Image (tube, rainbow, N blue to C red):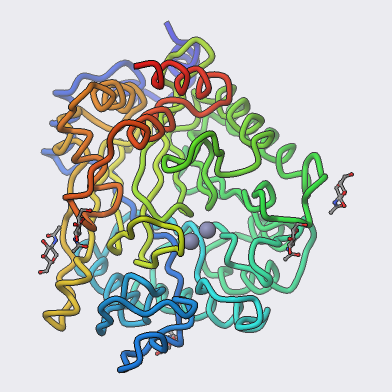
Length: 448
Ligand SMILES: *[C@@H]1O[C@H](CO)[C@@H](O)[C@H](O)[C@H]1NC(C)=O
Ligand SMILES: *[C@@H]1O[C@H](CO)[C@@H](O)[C@H](O)[C@H]1NC(C)=O
Ligand SMILES: *[C@@H]1O[C@H](CO)[C@@H](O)[C@H](O)[C@H]1NC(C)=O
Ligand SMILES: *[C@@H]1O[C@H](CO)[C@@H](O)[C@H](O)[C@H]1NC(C)=O
Ligand SMILES: *[C@@H]1O[C@H](CO)[C@@H](O)[C@H](O)[C@H]1NC(C)=O
Ligand SMILES: [Zn+2]
Ligand SMILES: [Zn+2]
């Protein structure tokens, strides 16, 4: 028997015992049927481009296209550009209409546009963060939103420091309505915090930009602003207090699904975080990230290959296509369903806007793209289920993999296929988050 289960049996109040023991699919269906399920929204990578405007000269539509011509600009945006305000506002209006009273919302960063450093400033970054914050608060006045800082939430971009600065201080003011003084204190100093969401659920918002390759100011530091030490202490305290933990951050752990042998953050930090998340996997019921702008899943395996963690990377609201990207994505927002008894993730409901259609129709018909459990016939989104999904996607000619890859681009174009090398890196990044196991996967897959 798993150590954590024993611990729980000994310590938890009686009503929590039911799901601390292994649950069957049937039980989850009952949960659904009774509506006894928690829900929260996840948004990421809004990338508001205030310069966006539809005009005849396609190179002048937005600064974020950096002189590339816009492809088919309309009121809701363009695949070459970051989000016009109308796109962002349509997303929140849809969310409010779809589920006005979720339990909370997580927001994994990146509000400013992809533009040259000269086209922004510290003040403009703060103004944009104030704009997105106020937009959310206007539509969801009584909802608690848990933000994480992104690599674009700073000027110059990526250079988030390990010490207090104007921007950490500004967001601590902007987010004071959502966060408690203790959380604001560490946010102000280092851009991270933790806060109790429910009596037995703690949310930890990490500043993973301190570990991001392009961040020059943290280059040679071993534990910028002591965040790793703080994280271990926080997780240890959660274990003592019998709390479950959700980890949120902008830059994810693991390997990029679209590049070979490339971790999203510096490799040494990836190893250290994975190590720590394994040590506390009995507490960590979910990890939620953004930054790649694509929809992907990872399963964190233990050292012996046992599925221990569910890791979700949400796609962006911005449809922006990087200069070297072979394709873009439609704007997306998502809802997670969770088991209120042990905070295990039960499902992902991914919503999206068909940007081409929205521009053509002059209205925004945000709609459900897929439900994870229905699309892939899974009982839930717990680590075991995600592992099973990974194994099935890895099969040659897997139809489910084509579906997974189409969702990866938020249904941008379902005729684009991903085979051979493209599929290998997708599968290895889904199944393996540390250097040794990922390398072994790449070797094995390339022989096949
Ligand atoms: C955000 O900025 C847009 C312009 O880009 C403006 O139209 C909108 O009113 C602003 N919203 C808030 C809440 O500040
Ligand atoms: C960061 O360092 C790299 C390599 O030295 C350099 O090319 C880049 O301009 C630096 N970026 C900033 C914002 O200082
Ligand atoms: C980090 O160390 C390298 C090698 O010693 C040095 O060249 C570089 O300037 C250092 N970077 C910082 C930000 O101190
Ligand atoms: C998006 O809309 C365009 C234009 O109406 C259509 O051609 C395309 O098939 C739609 N995409 C999806 C995934 O429905
Ligand atoms: C979708 O992808 C296919 C294959 O790469 C390409 O031929 C087609 O032009 C794309 N469609 C759109 C609307 O971009
Ligand atoms: Zn981004
Ligand atoms: Zn980012």
